[in-house]
Image (cartoon, rainbow, N blue to C red; front, side, top):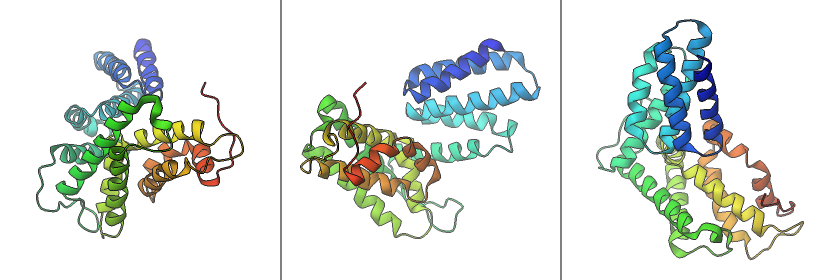
Length: 256
């Protein structure tokens, strides 16, 4: 049980450090040891719940949505009062629909109106993948004031889709916001924002030639976070960079 706690806690640390393979490995190891313990004591059950959630989040970040879905379905009945497992289940199903991109009639999500169709979810997922691929290719050059055409197009597509979805009644907009989170889009946008902040907003003065790039990122982020507490919590950690982008007057942060 002590080793399970150590592994589970290290999984959380690795999640926050974006070391998702290690986080998944630690959480899976902790969960296996907790199954062997087979105790119904409250501290053990709470540790088990945290470990399941941590493993699910690691699998989500690795885009292992089928594994994530099976894990959550297996443990949902054990924690009927927990609200995070149903939310993650819903996100896993949305992510799987987006990944399949098969198209079809607008789905019902149990809310006040229609949710996003497979076409829209697939479009969002492809746009996120385009942006992620460009970011991976650019490496350190992601802080450049002028984005390559493919990267700019990807950002504009996401912005256009979110703006259009915002005007649709029902859960269409919130579905796309969830896909942005589950497919790693929010994380990639924050990576880009941090790089821009460190290199483009120098000292107390903003380089006006570099502001359009960071403005494009913050525009998509603002739509992604609108009335969405889950995304807002993820983005709030980068609040200084956002205020710097908006106010153009913050100090440069050391790369270290």
